[in-house]
Image 1 (cartoon, rainbow, N blue to C red):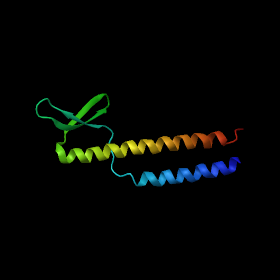
Image 2 (cartoon, rainbow, N blue to C red; image 1 turned 90 degrees about the vertical axis):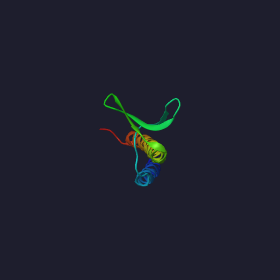
Image 3 (tube, rainbow, N blue to C red; image 1 turned 30 degrees about the vertical axis):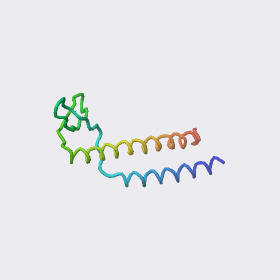
Image 4 (cartoon, one colour; image 1 turned 180 degrees about the vertical axis):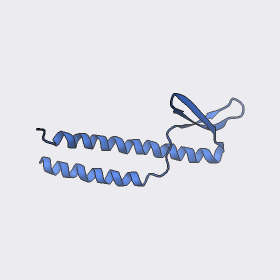
Length: 95
């Protein structure tokens, strides 16, 4: 039974690895809209304790949203891989 489960987990891991290759460009951070009168889209990210912000404009805002969505998808896949690897490690015999 454990062997079969390990084979299923390994197959799922291979599928997740393949999924990662299809994700595309990614960025950690978020697209925010700032300004009281003239609302404009910006990208912000925390790096080494400091917030970095760049102006995007409408065209680049859509691209940045896609990149941040790709990053979230990537994290979701990595979390699934972590759970599978934990299950595989638990099934290994220890000396």
